Length: 497
Image (cartoon, rainbow, N blue to C red):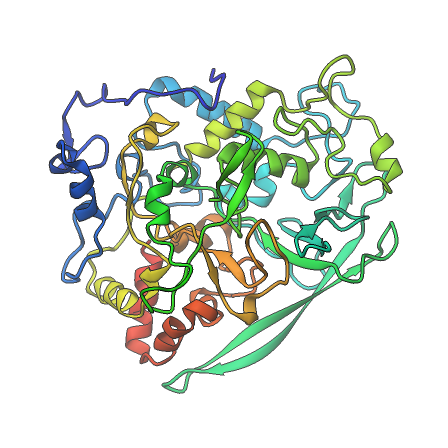
């Protein structure tokens, strides 16, 4: 079993032998020519944006380098381990998978390794939100929200956000027996038409939310609300393995190159390492590591305490006395941790190693045409195609890989249409982290729907693009001006990722 998520790992090469090649690629996922002593300049050349759209780029079929998964792209496409994981480590992955799927129950229970749910919660299992390790689904009108949650904040006197004084940082619409849930949320959509240059009409959904049946009285009048659909969890270990230097190389907060794109970092506090770190995970890049992201989800979404956040009552606020007095699943004579250190480490290991499926159809003429249009529209200003991960990554499977996530992990102003007025860390209400695009074409196959953006309002890729504003407005306008053939080619390229 894996006992520490931060242990230093050694590069695994035993399956193919040191220096062996796999399809012209070294086992690390980097061309052999890039592994010489002048690696920095070689890596710069490898990740440089292409100008040749006549054929696929070398290694483009492997978006996760040697960690790419070559399984049948069915509903389980996001649930396989890193393709370069040795057999000896796969037991840890499978046990972590079991904990990720575990249905937690309320305490006290005879199943001591599974009790401690809530008392307030949004879901009873990680995979209830991350459907098949993929994207969550927003509820239909009149349906109770399960994989859509709501972050809350109120402004302090210094302008920084603070938890809503009664309901905390997150609204929980489920609870264990004997504890009132915080309330319910009703969702309504208003449709408005957008006309494209060739006359096609696209109808966009404008969501509105209303909190009802509030158990603890009205919310603060200045409460900012941010709905969040659970994002896919594939490739997170590879994103964690990108060096800060490589991410910050794409930041341009003052837009000094005058291209209209001014991505910036979200510097957040690491409870794991007790220092400021670069945020990478979450819709606003508010979590710096997979471990902290996982612990925060255990605490806020399920109400389960972990070694990082040993709070057995989750987010219960002072006013929620029934919640704070409810039984918990932690030890009575020690730290009240409901997910033990070993369980937590296994979940982190599983999440770090959820593999990215291989690209599909990348040599089709329509897809190559769409790739050219994607670049010409300026989409790569935020959706940066390629990185090379660090040699000293936490996970051996993630070390020194050429990856194609199509993200810069930076914050961007996406315009008023997507703004939520909710601040997190240094991220303002109009700012969102660029989401990775790898695997996006398999969303319907894996999660059973095609709802996109942070709250699932977009009912397809074209709607998602048409919601882009702010720094992405120029790119959106170029898509609006495309004829149908080019627009379909662009969408075919995105679906191939």
